[in-house]
Image (tube, rainbow, N blue to C red; front, side, top):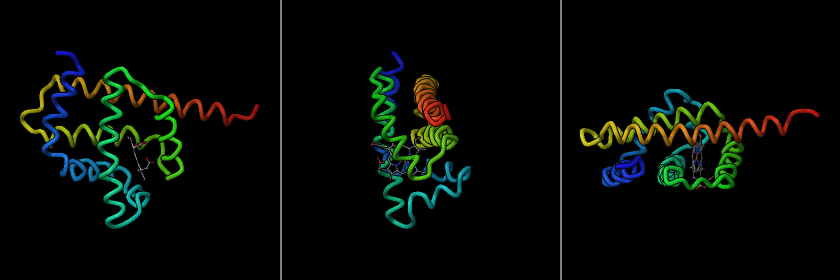
Length: 143
Ligand code: HEM
């Protein structure tokens, strides 16, 4: 099986746990960035924004695993997020939290191959994110 096969089979295993994935991801993220909770806005609206981010994030990661990298889309969501107050160090922590949450949701059915495939794709996204931030810094350098 290839990495994309492992990603797909892990997503199938995750599907029945979709409802509780947010609850396994965000508390881990907020331990590192408690201030980020307020960026989502409080209460139920904040919670629903958090929940609604997970599926597009997983789908974007699946696209990257599939070899489809939509740089324009990535740049747009990074720009939007910068405006929400999201900072570069938050991305690696969010991606680590996502992996830990997926492992916990799937439990004993999670395999080392799935883990390796996800680690690879998460690292790829992080490189892309860091690349965009590096370009932003170049763009904002005084000439
Ligand atoms: C920590 C504070 C964060 C806040 C307040 C926040 C807020 C939001 C909001 C309001 C949306 C929906 C509107 C939009 O697409 O812009 C969203 C979508 C999304 N967020 Fe976040 N976010 C945060 C962090 C992150 C991080 C660290 C990641 C990545 C690891 C992430 C990945 C995404 C993705 C992939 C989408 C979907 C974008 C799309 O469909 O175009 N977010 N977020």
